[in-house]
Image (cartoon, rainbow, N blue to C red):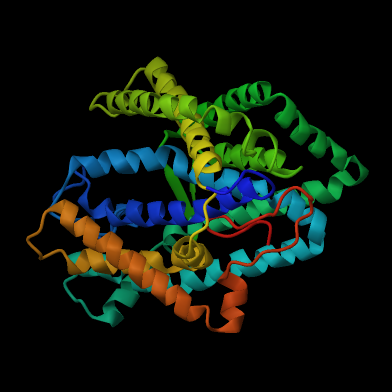
Length: 419
């Protein structure tokens, strides 16, 4: 491990891209083998089109994958939004609002639109083949166009992140000379981490629990290519702006610093996360029983989600700033290709799951083949695409000069808000 100093936390958080992208690939790779899925694939034409979440349904199952996916669902996307916010304010300070927004549109809106329009039909063709009477591409295309929505797969994250970037740019523009208020909040988080985290946890309850009670924790809505989990828009916004507050003055000191409270107390965070996840898992199992759960039990379950997510994100960030500041050529390559892997991996996941349907292999072996194959194909494919200069500029990992002398702002998954 390198000596702790300037750039330690930035390098550690930069290295998180390699880890979280692999977790995203692993998450999607095992969805076909969850034990709770029905025995047959979901019909392509029938609402609520649950194949959007589970595109391929295999007869081989393993309960361990259910627990693995539940663990990632608790914290991973919230963690993405937190990381995304860390570099937003320094990037705005360095580039200005206009350049920042143009960059976000180029690096988020452009790739998102291209993937949704071009790759998502290709990714979902195997979904149609599982139940189709006519497997022709022409018939698939007729059924696809007849859908009341345009499935976007994992790209929902990018449009929500773009909304967050637009919101923080608007805040930056409107505050004008009062921007020091954000810096004061960032300094407060450094100087009083316990108070900041306690307030954050309390606001998390307010942001999540009422919507989860009103709509349920798992309900989604989709209009055209835009999808949204109804219980979590304020929750994700809170994590994004918490990242903005933490990173406004740089990340090398304070909460995410190499000698900050997260790194010093990483054992506490790691010890707290598993039992809180197990608590949420047990309460969720009770609320999803055949009979409707009592309101108090639903609220308790929603509170447990807030706690498990908070602890999971804290543990992931603490482990990163404590142990992940290492240099590796393999990590460098994976980081450089991480955004592109995020964009294209879903096509490989679904097609490999479909190809393995007739194979008489255990679920664990199938999932390993899908995950390994997807990683290699999306990694090598992205590396090949990045040989095209225009593509490399949009999806490549590039560094910009820091707006804060103590921090060298790095990329994050699936892209860098500092770029």
